[in-house]
Amino acid sequence: MGLKHVQLEDVLRQLLLEEARHLWNAKGVGHPNLSQLSMTTGLNRKEVTARVRETRDTLPHTEGSAVTKAYTAWLQLVTDDPERRRLPIMDCGDGPSFELLARLAARGDVHHRAVLEELVRLGMVDVQGESVELRGDSFVPVDSLRDMLAFVGDNARDHLLAAVGNTLGREPRMLERAVFATGIPLQECERIHRLAREHWDAVHYKLVKEMTQAYQHAEGSGTARIRVGVYTYYEDESGRGLIADTPSLGSDELATHQEST
Image 1 (cartoon, helix red, strand yellow):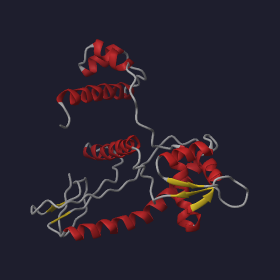
Image 2 (tube, one colour):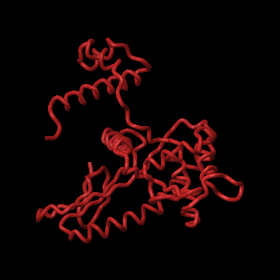
Image 3 (tube, rainbow, N blue to C red):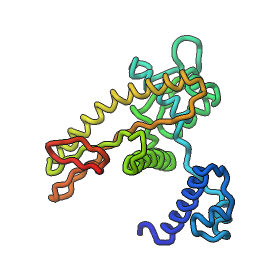
Image 4 (cartoon, rainbow, N blue to C red):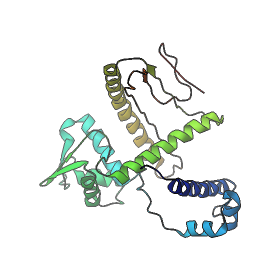
């Protein structure tokens, strides 16, 4: 029946510990000791010790993985030439192949067979004999709950970091906006959602191209990261007339409704 108090308390205690680590790291302490963590969190040393030594099953890393890089590079290839949705697995030196694509995307750090097996596991490609075909038009591993949760966590983290930073007046201010409307038919919400998807496809392609070029030009010397995202949410609230995106900082003016803080 949902989340129990004991489960919520465990999550909050772990979050306190992680935030304490971040605070000490910001002060120049790379590895805070048990006393420092206990003092900062208010948790006793015995519990801090147990949590520090506990091995937790972490979610997969979504940033910069060979799998996401290979899939994204393949999407770019398909955008330029739709016939490249199906590729030979092995590189025969005659045009694009999955082996070549994976090797370039992973810079040779991960074998192309390992990348292929992971994409198959995630349901992102179909292997047919000696060729492989791309599925979908975005990296959304719906067949793996752990991977989906990892993406939700990473996306929500950076969205909240941008929102909180803007609220606290940190510079530079991050782009973090939303528009919303109330009292419109559900069919219009669906139509606007499709419109947003169409525009995002074009923006997504350009952003991936710019990020790829920036990464290549850095030649391994870059130290920063960036995430650009978009979201849409709508629902029929059974007569209450509220169809809205989550309010966000610096929302654009609309004839319908807007919110900002």
